[in-house]
Image 1 (cartoon, rainbow, N blue to C red):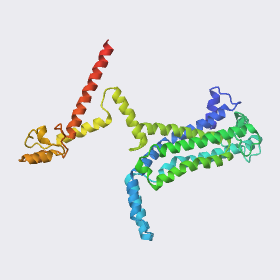
Image 2 (image 1 turned 90 degrees about the vertical axis):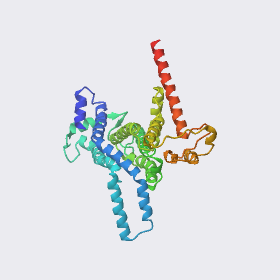
Image 3 (image 1 turned 60 degrees about the vertical axis):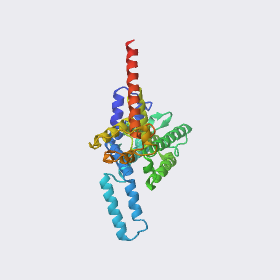
Image 4 (image 1 turned 90 degrees about the horizontal axis):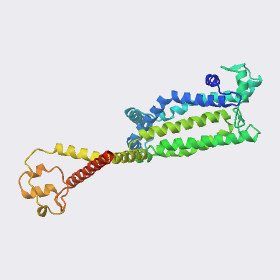
Amino acid sequence: MVMIHNGLVAIGIDTEHGLAWVLSIVGLTIVIRIILIPLFFKQIKASRGMQIMQPELQALQKKYKGKTDPASRQAQQQEMMALYKKHGTNPFSSCMPILLQMPIFFALFRVLASLPQLADGTYPRDSIGPLTQSLAEQAEASTLFGARLSDTFMLTTEMTPKIVALVLIALMSITTFITTRQLTMKNMSAAALDNPMARQQKMMMYLFPVIFAVTGVNFPIGVLIYWTTTNLWSMGQQFYTIHKHPAPGSEAEKKKIERENQKRIAKGLPTIEEEERQKRLEAALEEEPRGQRKQPVRKDRAGRGKTTREILASQGGGQEEDATDDAEVGPDGLTGEQRAQREYERRRQQRAQARRNKKKKKRR
């Protein structure tokens, strides 16, 4: 923090009005969060692993339900650890970024709480690391909207610091709620949300903001700046990750597919669903056995509700083996798969025509 402050002063930021020290706390937060980026991606990976393993975990819990003897508990624990190892995750991975920030959080709390004593010379030592008495005097004199960095809501008697502290506490609680909700509700599939762990996470989503709101009245202004900044960073980081790489089956993935389909339609390309349907159709045609050629079936002989296999069987011969599926033949003499192929070709021709018309307009 002192190094960032010295750098800000070197580029001309005035240290008397407090902006340099406020920005040094923000800079400290950004440095810590950049260092934690690899752990953040491990957190996302672990969270998705926990979602994927939920059906197996529920089956394991159901298997040992009501068994309280030591042997069953040990067996359940071993199988559970094997599940975690199989999916490359564990329940504590999602907590690592927060846990590793706690030493920084408490150290900053102690430093800011000791600023008045260090500034007036009553602190047991002459400095706190590189933070000397002269720098402490500057930091103690600097303010944010009239509130000193060491002020807390409970200890200050002035109204301005109380208002600034309340605003920062509110921002800290709101951003905590948004980041937790963004990660648990928007980036989890319906199956992952329907389990005891997800319900516990949902409860914590409402509990954490309340905890921060209650305890925040004892935090110095500088600590509130740090925690609000780290929450804002988490919001942006999570939004980017969820927007670009949503969890399978989540609400975020559905919205991403909708965005991709809109872009494809604008470019005259088939939607993702149509492309996957076409791939399945091509794969089915490639797997079709190369036996005796199918004889054409007239519309009046097909009959509503009869399957291709039934029609071929009624004609005799070995054509039953050549039927690729039991799709129903409608009154138009086509199976559902054939109708889907015809619809796909029709829409492909429409898109091709739309591209040609667009090119003509450009040339004009």
